[in-house]
Image (cartoon, rainbow, N blue to C red; front, side, top):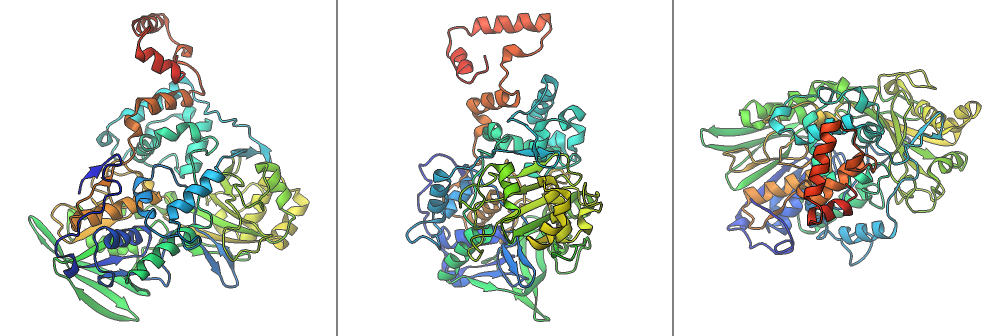
Length: 591
């Protein structure tokens, strides 16, 4: 497997790998990583679909990319997905997956034209004092000292950030800025989580720093992620003969471990209470999504709290990873990610408005009509003075094809589920859906004497507790996440957001798809480059733009310098006078 850039081979069709017709694949889990790997097996490895088996312990595909309507409970999504124009592997795949809505278009076509016609941007990023605009005004609010702390993290080698927390890098000055409000709520970082992961995010999205305050950096699907992404992939795979095996739990994968060779030999499954073994040869490839950030999700309802389940259950994704990891050190360290649910949990909820009574309060904040069918909030709105650190968003409506056209679906989440609310004096995890809605309505600015009635009769709210929602961000070091294809593995790969691939960032759709692509290309020896992670971190223009944006447009000459530093800067500017360097710095507003 190798990386490529540019368009020379971006659309080239790889030659059919040798003897692929006599090989097979087993994919454990049916989340985005598995579905993507299966698509790459079909499209690029040209493996017969009937030889590809997706094993799923649940009854539906999609993993964390859900979009359910639970009978007698309501609509619910555990999370939402923010996409970027430089998700290179994602768009490489989705150009080949037909839309299930528009004849003749791919998912990429559909997505591209939707976001071109209706671009995303926010008109209110944060509120305070019960629905008042917090007037972050696209400013980061960083001092020179805070900017240097961020630059320091950006320049620190990965190995020096092993097991370090963000609190080891930043002080309270940074944590009290708009920058940190934007960052922590958009990406779901907590103060004591991985400095290494934050550095990766900064480098990966340096070209979008200027778009963080108003979300111009983001793009969204038309419907929920399940209907817009998962269903078209499943249809494509089934049309190519791929086999789906639901309600089947993989309880172990057994290996033959030799000094220079690791071979998966047996998949142990449980189906309908019966244990079976799938015996493997070196021509049978196993792709395993190790770990899950939606493991142990517990659902509430309008009248029921979600509760919290922190046990690692037999047959779960972390349990299986533990069994596999015991067999070889290169298979990672799952306990780094699944043993601190008090730090990694958060609660999300889906509010379904049932009439028009709540809509004026929404319009007052986002300045748009939520029933227009176009961009509404343009990303999350954060109630910055919320004890739960509550953020909410309304994407284009309807979010479900079955959704009544006069109703609106709101997705919200709170990062601190153990704290009492500002209006509802209970921990978020202990609140019914109705109580969570009441807290949200309070932060919208609904008069206190109307809140209970609107939450009860004008909305239906379904909550979800996810103990491992941000487990990806637990402090870590090299080796905690296994390589996509660990050294010596001949027929086994880890895929998904708990596998390790260089430079890219977890908690993204791109990461899932990239690991699936790298796994297939490596094991099947597909002779075509995997698109490298977008190289904006190496582009001087993006670096200059980001520095100016982080400093709220202040120029280099506006820095507070002592006498010697001012003299040195003056000398430097004199040396570049009349050169291309001077022109570059002027064009990007550095000087």
